[in-house]
Length: 123
Image (cartoon, rainbow, N blue to C red; front, side, top):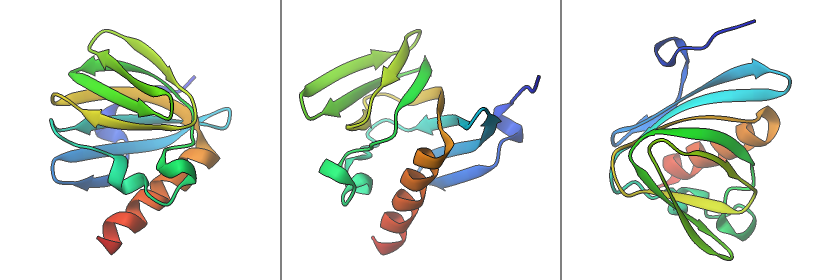
C-alpha cells in the first residue's frame, strides 16, 4: 500500500494561485491534489479539446470550497463534503477558494494536463 500527501506530490501546474499536484497512484490511475482560487475558470485552458471540455473522467472529494461544473447538458454545483464523479465533457469554475483530491486514469489525465500547460504557455 502507498499513501500520498499533498506536500510530497510533484507540482504539475501552478500560477495565479492555482496549485495542481499529481502523481501516479497505481492501477493506471493518478491522484491529484488541486487548489483553485475563487474565480478560477478552467474553460479557457480547455479550448481545443473535444467540445472545448475536459474529456478525462475524475472521481474525487471536495475538501473545501464550491465548484460550478459546466457540461454540454448544463451545469452542476459541488461543495465541501461532497464526493463526485465527473464524466468526460466538463469544465470547472471555482466559485470559492476550492481544494479537491481526485483520481483519474493516468493516460487521459496526462493528455489534459499537457494541453492546459500548452494553452498557458501560448496565452
